[in-house]
Amino acid sequence: MSADQRHILRGMLERFVRGDDQSLRFTNEIEILVRTQFRDAEFYEELSYNLATYSPGGGDHLIDEKELARELSLLIAGPLADPPGGAPN
Image (cartoon, rainbow, N blue to C red; front, side, top):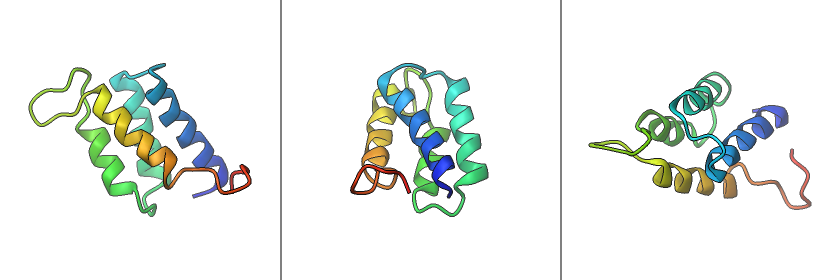
């Protein structure tokens, strides 16, 4: 994954977590980016699954906004965290 792609994905995830856009349309955009640019990333499977099972309001076998935001926050703080020194790689 390039630094630019990583920056774009992180920004999209932060936008969802902040509550700026939690629509299915937006999560579909994230899912497309992940499937086309991050297939080899260690977080690919889990993130793809979380996005595929997301539905505003949740439901049977689905996750809601709060749960997806929690999962995305872990990803932002983990694999997508800025390296020490604050500069993206």
